[in-house]
Length: 384
View 1 (cartoon, one colour):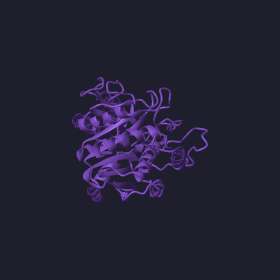
View 2 (cartoon, one colour):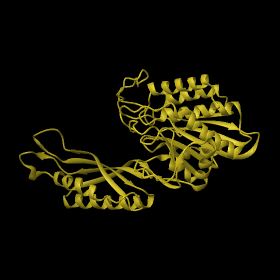
View 3 (cartoon, helix red, strand yellow):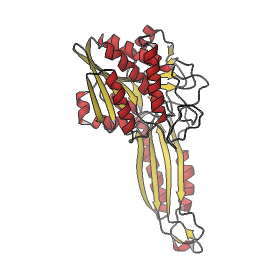
């Protein structure tokens, strides 16, 4: 292993410090500061800050020109209260690193430690600490930042820890690995009236009742594949919490989910048509907006080949034919495929480990050296 016990202890302490101080998407200023402070000890040739928001990139230059390999991790935590008795549990009420991004950052910090001691022979490595992954805004913001043009990779690699499979085992496959998804917000506006005279107003009550079922029924209920789609109603609000008012306004929030971007476009059209038809029939005004927009995440064959070779070289068990992939969950790393071949692998967190986004989740630190070894081997194979 390329890390000494002292270095590994230091990186574990770094992860626990991140775990204590989670910040949600778009608010990662202190996390970025901690990352930059730690990176200084790993001696990158260049640090780029405020990339696409609070993003940080560390650049390690080889001795001669060559391709750029980018390795990406995420800065943000979740707006979920952590429920644990860990000595390093979150100190921020209502927020926690319950998806493992603290561990992903620590893997990149281990990689930075190795690269600080030995640069690649050629080309360069960019370690990207990306903001705002959890709401789907971060990758797009990084790509839109003019500074990204100076960092543009020839290959982009990443990982995500994966509860439910053996610790340290890897899932890796070509093609789709994460679904496209988006949050749809429907606002229906009519006219309030006294509850004793609902006929004097225009209430969205029955339109809401019909839409709650009809939106859900838009999903294909098909197994995971090209025809898969799912609509999950996540929130609804009708009027005000009062007995004397017939409501004049309602909101419905729903998550639309498909395996492909093309299927998503079709689902969006059908959902908007359905909502518009119900609104017009009830005499309501309608506004539709979208948040948390994720494109499909699809692994490029050449990037998968680079990771597969690294896994074989490091003797790490892996498979491609798992029913767990593609995942229904979304991941905004897929956008990087628009600028370079890219691939994400899934690193097992343990068969009985708490699931991602659970209030008792904690990243297994045993994965830090494993993830770093895979990336370092891939870098060495590509850049020497």
